[in-house]
Image (cartoon, rainbow, N blue to C red):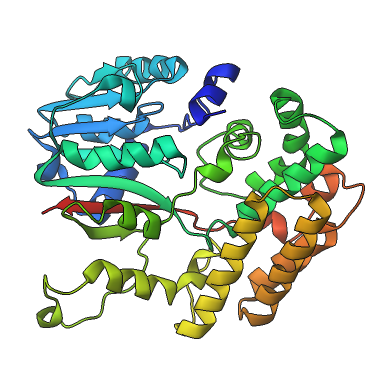
Length: 377
């Protein structure tokens, strides 16, 4: 089952943001785009394409900058309805979006754009990889591409939740496609976790449908390394990421177009991955060996969770890597959260309430989703 088929089967679009004031959301998106090298002048009178636009809420900050054209591509009818409602209620001058109710493959779009955006959609499935290979063909010379990727270290906390959710499903004897019943169980287990997130914009119910009940979630995680390997035949190079994957301290005269600047950035990223494990922490020990050990342990946990094997075997392999992280991390919050997790990992009759009441782990979330902007030079 694809992500789109899952959404259509349940007639959902669990990406709608709940906010009191759309102006606050517009300001946060403007800030994000500036971090990625895009300001209002970069958007004004330009041609913009957003692939898998979801609710359309993120596109509003672009449309009020008055681009020449903004195209929102979204194949889910529930999301299309959200887009129409959002734009019907905008009381600010803006460019009316052109809505294409098709998948990227169905659209057969040939136009070229100054900015192409595809966030929180592309994963590692064959279809998604093929889409990623086609997107650069739609970018004008010196145009920009914005994508999202995951950090295995930043995804650690929610990967561990995904494993607990699967454990609860096995105990309940429900099938993977018993989505609504599973969602009720997962709400009992994880709602208290989500309520610790101060700036959460989605409802717990939507988040759980999108991250735990979603049968495609493990295929939604594409890494920056994978993105760059797929795009290497195109003249695309990194402008910026947000959050920053590394600190740039080179003397500006040392930076040359002949250098492998993208490779340099990835190497620096691997040397600072600990700061992504917890969304509240920024302090990190810049030690390449230490950070690489953390990166490899998190990567192994991801690969174990993705494998088809019995739950007991998975538990043992996950426990081994968690104990390794506990041993090597200097961060007390991470240590306490992972020790908390081990209390329930091997519980044979695990109950949702046990997960809900984990003192430290329920507050443990990472910086898992990153934005990257690339220029077509």
